[in-house]
Length: 320
Image 1 (tube, rainbow, N blue to C red):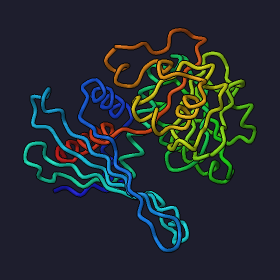
Image 2 (tube, rainbow, N blue to C red):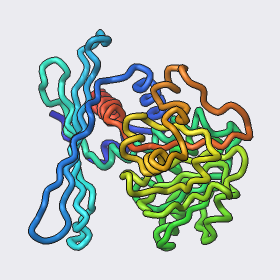
Image 3 (tube, rainbow, N blue to C red):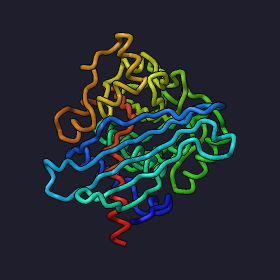
């Protein structure tokens, strides 16, 4: 069994390859049961959340032997006090026929790549072809991956970064500049929302940061944070003005506050979601229709994405 580190994952992947890998995965599909949530309670402190995300090749339609995979993730809010990441995990890849373990892959790194690649895949269908101005809201671990991913599918000429802690945004901007991307920190978020062709947000803000009234015609909004029904990154006006897209209908309508809350309030109906990534990848539903549309993509993550990314990393490692 291969043990695959974060560096190994980085060495194996690039965004053009990952975006195409996910396009094929959503077109072909896989079996992905609803993710399991378990809360581990302690006498003191906040509970840890244990997440299990299984998926496997659909052997009813596949002629290949295929794979089984499961991502095991823990979210421990109190880890900051002991100088450890709040989110940890691994991805276990198994042989589809025998169940033999094939690889144990660093879970957080794999998640960063597949999440950013899913956003970029949506951007290929939803953002204007000439989109060149990118606003990234948030400067956590995922944010630079989102910047690189969007820049791999659109001619991004300038990246502006807003974060509550300015110093973290500065570190991210410096790193992107070293890679040849034009990036800088901004303080006026509202002004930047009106400036951007693509707004990509990855935060856990309990209050909306993306104000729909400020979005320019033709803008594309990519929402990756706010992964519970109680959290939200966009306001009602953004939802009202936009053509809505999601990674999976089941996940977004159950877990994403940006979709769940407007549904509960009657602002939108399930039919207002134009398409998910399965429908876009299969050509069943349309993406952007004209240059003035505002499009909004909400991602909550899918086990299919982890499976596709895990298989890709494993095959490239084995080829080496």
